[in-house]
Length: 106
Image (cartoon, rainbow, N blue to C red; front, side, top):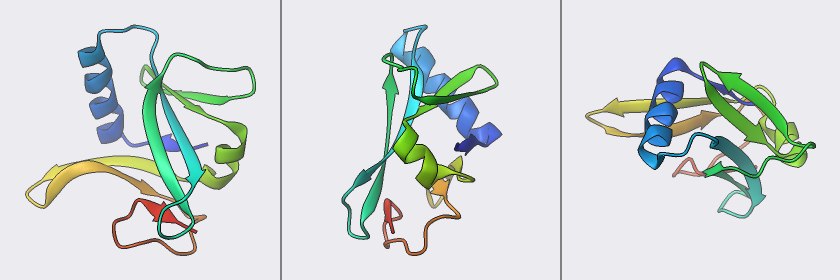
């Protein structure tokens, strides 16, 4: 299951508040594609199945489907906001190779 840093948790909470829906969860998934073989996908979701892996970080619910959970085991989602740019980044110890944009891995 993927972990969220405090900075990522705070940013996700802020984005969820802007959406104005109380029952949202952050879904993190791995999909085939991208220049290295797999790509990350993140979006807000209200549809959580019994098979999904779930975790909560300071009030932020995170959901991962079973096949993505295997590829995200030990991974961490962080958020950086600085002069070099702002955005989410996933540090995944399971990735043997990543592309230059950081959005796909193998």
